[in-house]
Amino acid sequence: MLRDPQEITARLATFASELSYEDLPSAARAHVKNILLGTVACAFAGHASEETPQIAGLATALGSGADSSVIGGGRLSLAGATLLNGYLITAVTMCDVYRPTHTHVTPEVVPPALAVAERDGLTGRELLVALAAGLEVTARVGLGADYPAFRKRGWHGPGVFGTFGAAASTGRLLRLDAAGMARAFGIAGSQASGTFAAWQTPVIKFHQSRAALSGLMAAILASQDFIATQEFLTAKDGGLYSTYVDGVEPGRVVEDIGRRWELEQISLRLWPSGSPMQGINTALFDLVERHTIDSDAIRAVRIALSPTVYDMHGKLPHYNGKFEALISAHYTAAVILRDRELTMKQYEAGRISDPLLRREAEKIAFAADPALQGVQAIAEIEMKDGTVLSARCDHPRGSFENPLSSEELKTKFRTYAAPFRAESDIVQAIDMIERLEHQSSVKDLMGLLRSQA
Image 1: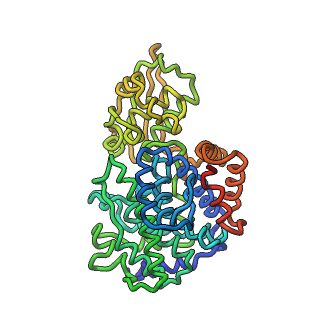
Image 2: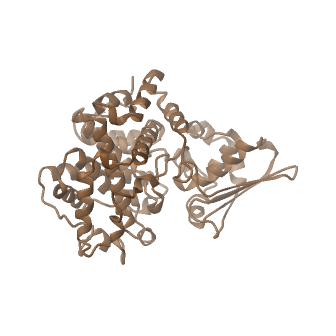
Image 3: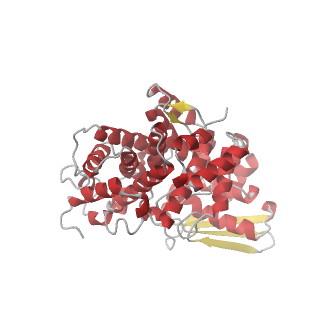
């Protein structure tokens, strides 16, 4: 336990600035590469989002230049590529989540690191270390924030915590020392924002891409010796832990740092749909993969959720358009039972508007069960012959306790990269990410991630 809370920012900044490849245990290195593979797949998929062209317009307007690649696109300025890649990663709600603070981490941390590493021709090993620093910082800043109290006030984790992780990943590549990294945190914290007033609108996803850009700007300003507080987290007047919440124990931020890796707790998603819905998806896929279920022979479907997930996703039987379908548990459950798969094909306009699917979605009975917590879910299917099939999910696929296999991640990557690159390029890109520390220049990887058109 720290005697002086003011040491926290300094300790975190020292960790981020001095982290080396050798400091990372093999499990942490492997998970960073898995996270990058899943993140790039999400960015390819993000081109299917309805509002992506609007964010692309904003990204293009941010400045001229072509320093950095857009995943599945062309080239934009450093700021433009950071903003657009950040949105692409989260656009179809298929990216990671750090469940202790319900925070999507990769849309903030990965884009500015990719942009700077590509621009400066840095090595894959340097990128891997920078990503590890940013992922760990985002998770640990959130740990000190007493998340239930933070959420009760309406704050949204990615827009607040993610700015620090983006500053850490970028600052590490810009070779900031500990003092410079602490200033970057001060600048990042001054831009930290985002609340759940944006829920059920695409703005909730914009929090992530805006945080990526904020972290980029913070690190660049800090690299130019811009003066900023080096004690933002614990400042008594306006600091994160005195303003966003009260009565926290910020010593948790640096407890066992460098020995216990919170980044290993970051969950990945196999399917597009809201992250709290992954328990529902897992339970239903467990059923349809174990049993031959004829959708027309189903009499009733009952799904129990935790009260929090029920309030967020279990009350949306009516949906209009892709974004609402992505966060509607009714739609997702109905399409899994009917199609036995869940990719972006299930979110095409014709599938969403299918009247039969709409009627089936409206008939699914969701209920809040106080005995369930977090993403836990229980799915029960009653067949017309009286047979009852049930499955319970405590840990969704992609979680720390139930991780995705290497083949599942590669399949996800291939599925969403296919419209943009030839199969030979996809195989090469996967190999480069799996052997990231051996790549002499990130430029080579980014060249494979741009659109071939």
